[in-house]
Length: 611
Image 1 (cartoon, rainbow, N blue to C red):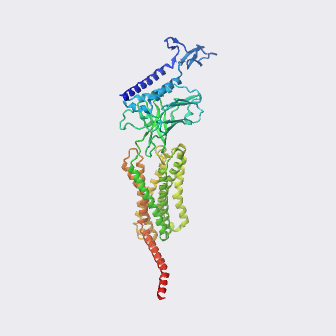
Image 2: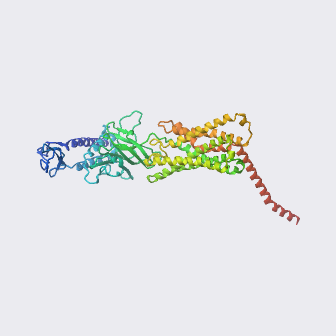
Image 3: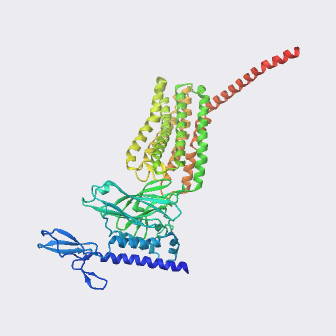
């Protein structure tokens, strides 16, 4: 019974706030000839005089203050050389004082101790009505100083400042506690400089209101294919701006800061009574905070972040990625060890030399990319680590591209081998061409991408240290080169398969042709695997993609290092033969060393027996 009585009280307070707001807003704009009513019901004027001082020029305007104990002003317009009253906003209470009393009541019913009582309120729109009434009331406020704190309650704060055409970028910062024990949750409202340029030269004002607990009780109207309720994960920030301003930037600290707490920027649509995803666009989503770019309208004045329902947080993906990357890194390290062990035995010609240079650099590129991937996914990203995230994205992009460009150089090696051009080319020149393609081209693409997209903060994905897709399509700077290289390599393999059927080449027993065939087989296996991997990767960016696609991509991507070890090294019989010979040589040396160490001992024993 106590809970229901408290809920009834809250319901009455909400009704009082919303109706008083409407009544007050209709009262403070009095037209010409209107009178103020005294408490006794007698008409009482709030003016000092009936006209302005000074000359009356046609269509000019002026204003006069209200009488003592009244707040507001009386506006006059010059008509036919006479001052005529055009508007009157005189009231016995200032808007600011009334709004503060209003906010005290709102603070009481938004207290964490009262939040549970909202569940018993029969009017499902009560919380939405409360938000709307506060926003509409705030429109009537007038900022007197350059900036000021209008209301500073525990569960509702209101701040404002003056703005004009020449104002630099302005921001309002909030720090509010969800209850008396938890740490404060931060929020910030920014008005970009390009938006402020839209204002007229005369002064305007911007007001923002922050609610730490309101998000927990806002009830959305039913929407098809949306599971309700959706959890709000930050402050609810309302803004009151001049009509010419449309775009704002809001920063929210997450209440739930767990790794899988992805966010979705939203605005509250007062007519539809629900969160509107189209009102905002994600700019940044890191471990602790979210930055949103939102569109301000007369029906969308309040904004927040929701726990995103779109992110794939299935633990299966984390396990696959963790295990796969471990296997991949160990495989690549083993690949490099094997190459170092058999190097002198397998690099017998220029083409075989460059083939193993390619294998080594492919392994190094993927190994380094995997290391950067681990750095980007495990370190605690904070606001001050934004530049670190940019660096992680840049080097991951660069080394993943290098992997593909060294594969491209392998295909070019095949072409030149068939055309018998490498026999006339020095090894040093071949190395220069290889490194220019393998690392030079990726470097140009990676630098160009970050230079174009980073100034607008569109380089990275909001939720991860990787190339952006939703806003700038920066990911195309990886996808296009990668898929073009896959296509080129497959065409080269097809050409080789056709040409090796010709008697002039197919019957040749030259060592270079045998090496070219091994390279072709290697390229024919690895290229589709790499292409298929990133094909599934692009598919996972499409909203609503099946979990199966995410799992397949995680598997293929995580085990790329193992594929390179298997198809690039272990399945090459020349490398296996060289490795066996190397092991036999090491065993032979070990036995010889053992015999040598036993020789003097046996000799001394024999002398002792003779003695």
